[in-house]
Amino acid sequence: MIDVFRITTGPYANDLSGTGAKLVGGRWNRPGISVLYTSSSRALATLEVLVHAPIFAVPKDYFVLTIRLPEDSMQTVPADHLPDGWDATQPPESIKDITEEWIREGRFLVLKVPSAIVLHEYNYLVNPAHPRALEVYTLDKQPYRFDPRLMR
Image 1 (tube, rainbow, N blue to C red):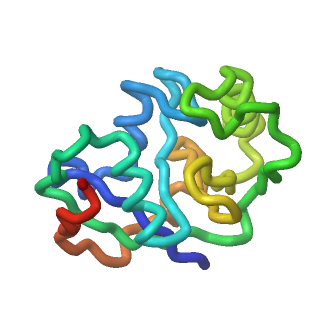
Image 2 (tube, helix red, strand yellow):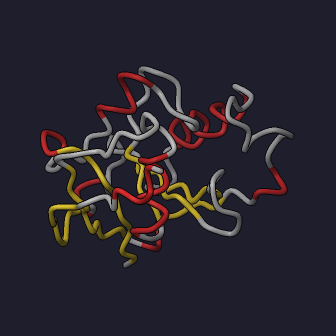
């Protein structure tokens, strides 16, 4: 098992369904595709939230979740197998094809992908429709406070 982290607002703190990503899409998925985004550390999860936050706005009503994943159902996407610009602010749409193929094949519950924010760090995408999704669970949930100095 591996522990990963997710920082999310209160209304979604008990939701592991990937609904948010399904509604708006993300770096690795198009709208309409359910994916649960998690990170290798609390620090990376913090940056993943802040990179989308308005400047000078301290996010409020957040929780940090520690989520446990089975390690034996994980596919890794090496950064050197990704197209040029995959880590750009507006990445090529082709990286979303990787996620759709992973979901379509259905062999692995988790897709380990490189962070576009921090080199040599990883995010873990979970397919909530995978047969083993019931093995994913929240180990801990704590209120999370963003240090206001991060917003300067």
